[in-house]
Length: 361
Image (cartoon, rainbow, N blue to C red; front, side, top):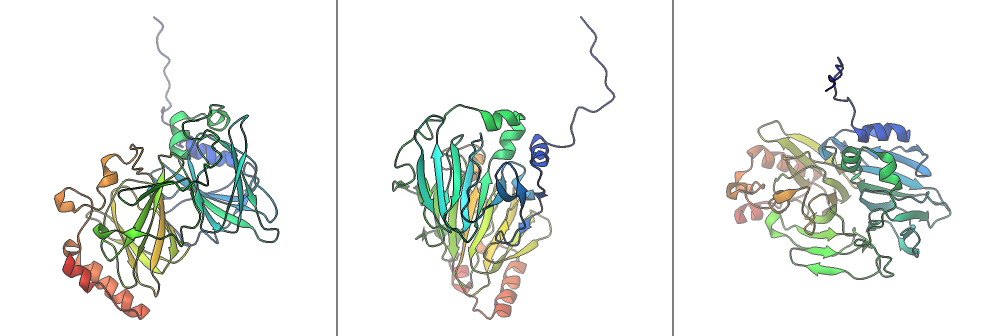
């Protein structure tokens, strides 16, 4: 038997396959914990997309998912593409249409507007068009590219696999137009949400502060999402979960606190367009210190239909930590939380409405 070769170099590479791919795309990677405004993030020419864009992989993703922003110039379209990672698209501004098809199958086109949410099914061909001849259309996408590229570490396979996932999409004519199905637990299974900003939400008592929510299961994905809203002068209970939840502020002004258990609290002030991604198992809490109800869209792991990435954590984020869950009840929170919120309300000139929720616990 031949002797093994001996190398004085370490086997570990300094960069992940995902980060090598980002470098090959020719645009910079935005990192950190927080994006102040997705509407104004500077974009660079992105050859593969055929329009300006920016790739974002914040610390809280754990490099399991990522985000990117892309613009479609007035009267133009992006290049058609397909890929072996999931992609959930939120329209930041503008209006237009998307065409989706399987290789050799019929093409189906649906229209979208600011606030729309949808997902081209896995490995389908798709192309986005701007419906305005005078204004660009900008969108934010959350994708599972990091985990897929790091697992397979073969970009050619990721972008050039011909397998049609007909269990996810089989060229159904009404795929993006049917009404979907509502399930218990505020879950709406649908493939197209016309406007997350004005969607009617359902009461969510467990998170406190008079909040409401709707959860989305879209395009048979493992990635999923939800929209939550809470009233002026209130805040939600602190909780933690796994990585990769991209929280996009739709309305209201306020701030989020984030901290690893037992570590100093970090504060991030937000407004419409801000985005924050809490790291895995960091406690975090959202506060409405503005004059309007605060609404946000969270695009994340934790599907109620296809369990996996979040495991059992997906159902524990609104269960009392004293009962084995991942949520801190109001009566157990650090006193600095209330003091900070009282100061924020006074500074904004709004009434603190939390006393009635403290009494309820």
